[in-house]
Amino acid sequence: MQSHSSNPDQRPDHRQGQSLAQRLANPTRFMELSAKLLPAFAGAATAVILYGLFLVFFNSPADYQQGETVRIMYIHVPSAWLSMMAYGLVAVSSFGLLVFRHPLADVSAKAAVPIGAAFTFLALLTGSLWGKPMWGTYWVWDARLTSVLVLFFLYLGLMALRSSLEDETLAAKLTAVLALVGVTLLPIIKFSVNWWNTLHQPSTGFTTSIDPSMRWPLWIMAIGFSLLFFAMHMKGMRNEVLRRRVKALRLADVARRESAPDPVAAE
Image 1 (cartoon, rainbow, N blue to C red):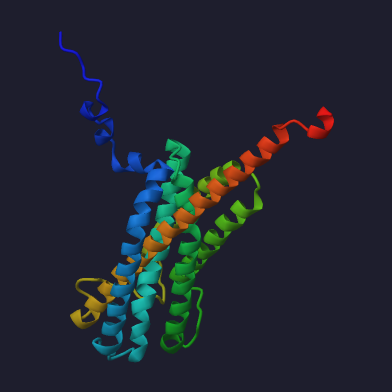
Image 2 (cartoon, rainbow, N blue to C red; image 1 turned 90 degrees about the vertical axis):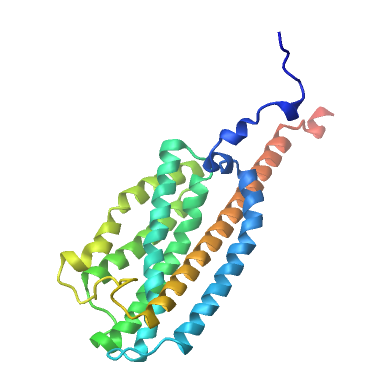
């Protein structure tokens, strides 16, 4: 009979069969990997956005109808896209928490919410700045604008609900449920310009509807903003993992102090 070697280096590595998601489920592994990836994402985001801004201001022409106002598009479109993508990530993370009990799912959802709210606010702000010269007003109760405003309030509601509860486990579950209910808003935002008669122009096509001199800067800015989002999300997750570790250490220290014998009572 053949004997199995006791050398651990000769044993099959069961981790090789694990998926990337399973390996990253360990917060320690996530912290190790994110420490290496975060500088790369941040540096790439900075370089791509700077290059995109150079194209926007020095290589992209003014529009024959909108004039220089068209340059708002290079900030507005990526922000609007990321406002929905961020909420999609919140919904997927919430699903992972409720169904699969993934250890980092709630960390991901919590980190994505304020970033998504910031991009949604930026989309609303730049849209209003564009609307003033184009529509003659900063705001109209248009289907697209109103639905994006509801998305912004939904982000605020998620943050308010989580901060109002001291029990983090309960807060995570309730915010996850609310996030999954709110995901129905995304198709309304996406198709609102097709379903209703709105002032908002149809979605900007990246391939056919705009001239290449404007298309490529828009692509570059969209990529740069996406890299920025992932860098910020990764940083937010790292901060949340560290916060929870510090909290766990403090609670353990308090429990240890309470369980220690009272020297005064012992005398």
